[in-house]
Image (cartoon, rainbow, N blue to C red):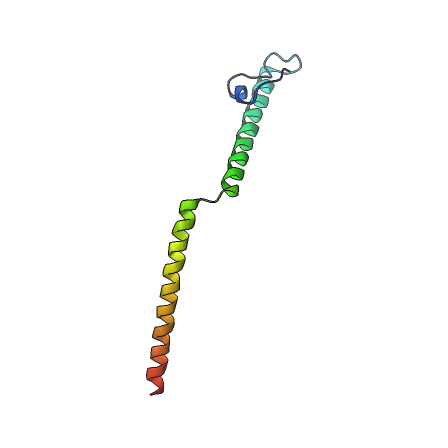
Length: 88
């Protein structure tokens, strides 16, 4: 088996011509190798995404947090008003 550059795994089957493998076995191993490479790429991209927070998303969440604070304040004020009306 020869050493293959990572990106070449999608272009050329490194298991073709191996003396101890049938064509079907070589094809199955190649599919597993491509799948493993795809999983590695997904893992690497997810690490990048989790390390650096999305600034746009954070800004939108901050706006939402401010609005929710206002809603909570108004809700508390309206509850307080209802309680005061009931006591008089």
